[in-house]
Length: 393
Image (tube, rainbow, N blue to C red; front, side, top):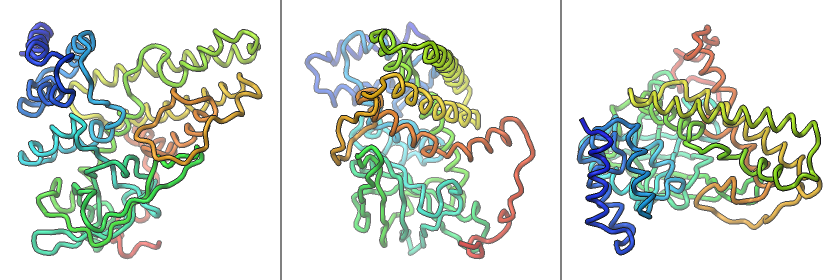
């Protein structure tokens, strides 16, 4: 059993062999992966040591103290939080060896080709088609709200492979090369002025069957692993006290006493407590992950994350008064990551509106919590046993 002392010893060996001050950043990250110190709970040979997930903090603390570079997790969050656990669970050994190392080091950025113009909240209604031609699949369709598509090398993709069965049963999961012919990425400008999201058009894109993840027709089951991990990645991220959206508004409150009112004080206290409760609940959820894959509980964290962000950002704009209505920059750009705390209050207020849509709408997540966590009766679904091709659209 690998314990904390053993991990410290291995980390010290890594630092001695590859001093951060004199080692190329990418070379250091590759060496860290090969030493099993990337994600210690992954299997040996795949960046881990089969150790408890909770011990990752031991490695991270030692490396941070030594000034070692990280893999810019915010930039490659889709790969780390969604693609990697799905590949680990359903991928072949060849797929794991090929994709996990460059994914973790950040050499290859990933995006998620799930949502479509007519299949967002009802994702299983997706219409992008994949037709088998010998050893390839030919894919045609459109995806939307795709973060990082403009910088991504790879995508996790779900497409309909059998229209003659009910919608959940006729989906297959693929790994799509974003540089292949027929992949067209176009920016979607948002309310913030940026084009952080994209729409992706797929025209006769050929995907080898070797890039299929899981069995044909099992795409919905495979996608549940991705979606459950996505909700934890969004709503259960590790934060220090006053990390995230509550930090800037608490800082303003302390530094700008002239802005304070009794009513704002009461509202800030309430949101501060709720933020801390959410942070500690997320820590407990991550500890539960030691036992296996995340379940539907992550939907509750994602719900809380969206609501809190929107209430806190609204309070911050109100606290700042007239200056809260200012906006720093409407320049059209295509950022590589979302920076909630690096911009002004106006940006946080506008960007947080998307939190109740992305990663599963709050309305759908409420159903998940009700049915899969609380055990309440499911809502009637008249299309459950109807072939996808026979559904009204």
